[in-house]
Length: 251
Ligand code: PGA
Image (cartoon, rainbow, N blue to C red; front, top):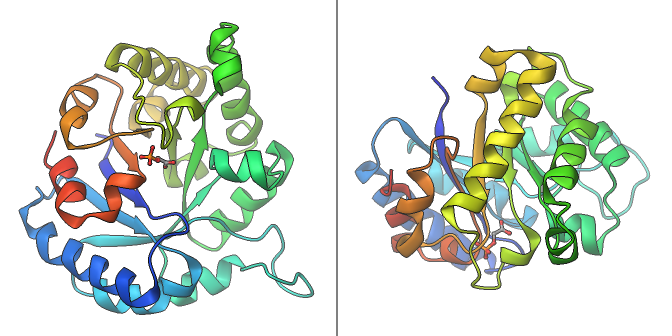
């Protein structure tokens, strides 16, 4: 049975002390969340070590928002996968649309980063999703299929056990516009079919696929009720512990 997960992507928000306070609040409230629902927070790099301490002994996992595409060395400003595991991370987000859009993250780079992250023992939350032009041109299935294949078809079935996918329609991120439950479900089902075609039905059934894009307490229940939606990658609403936990209670 695949795992249900609610992950909070804090993006470039909170100071270290605010982040630690948020992590403590999430950890304290996480006891309300059923054992079958995993919780993860992804703070900025500077927060990882103190947030790991704040989360110690709780069920809340720790994720980075990105990692370097090299193991170590002269790459100013980058953070390597072994630094992330050493800081206490069990996960990293990769391929977030903001990284693809603003920082030139290509599928080729994501293949390299994913391999490095998996070799370091991290689980990868791989983001895919179409932008507004692509949706309006009716290309959303094609775009998401291609992004999924480009990275995941380079992996083995064994490596797929450490992959979580997040479908995040770019037009719904931070805009207040949410994909309808039907719009999200049909893409999630499509992603699962893409996985089944390469890895077989069992891997496809076992892979957690999250929805992201203006997911909040008021719409999480309807989204999570869909057959192929296994939780959420939450931006704005993850910055309030109450909202984040409320979302995790929406299964
Ligand atoms: P949002 O962001 O919930 O603020 O729309 C989601 C994301 O980008 O992960």
